[in-house]
Length: 182
Ligand code: MG
Ligand code: FE
Image (cartoon, rainbow, N blue to C red; front, side):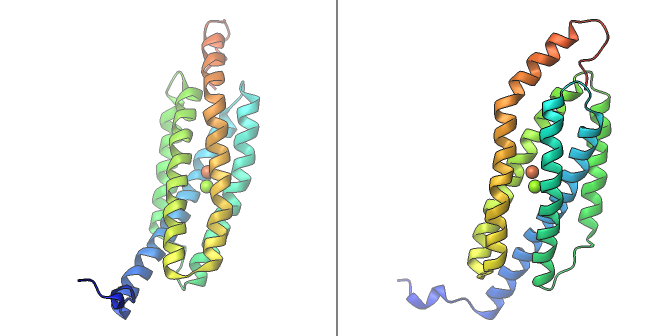
């Protein structure tokens, strides 16, 4: 039979919880740095899809602010943000950007990558929200609840506009002048 006492964690359980929590915050920070690099590369290359470019530029501003807010959350918990993961994430994002340059349908592949990435972010913030509740970190909880809808809005935009981008790509690809790629 389970005892009611079981829900009150020991100090060792708390350490485990806190350590996973801080890891997840650092992961989120690295993710936002990666997002910024990826989105910046993508936006700078787009020439023939102005609406998508504008929406990405808007999300770059949001992403920078998210990274700043999450860094503050980490610092409030006594962690540091100069992690190797951030650098690895940035390097990976640059490579993704460069890999995309070789694709003749760069805009389409970039859109697919962004769509997947936004959903990865949504999942990350949902998990962080649960963790923040469990550790009782109300400031971070409020921040994650503010960031989550920005990720959902970006995912939603892609959800509703990727078909149009694919159509435009295929239209442009049939015309002379090679304007379809980005
Ligand atoms: Mg983000
Ligand atoms: Fe995002």
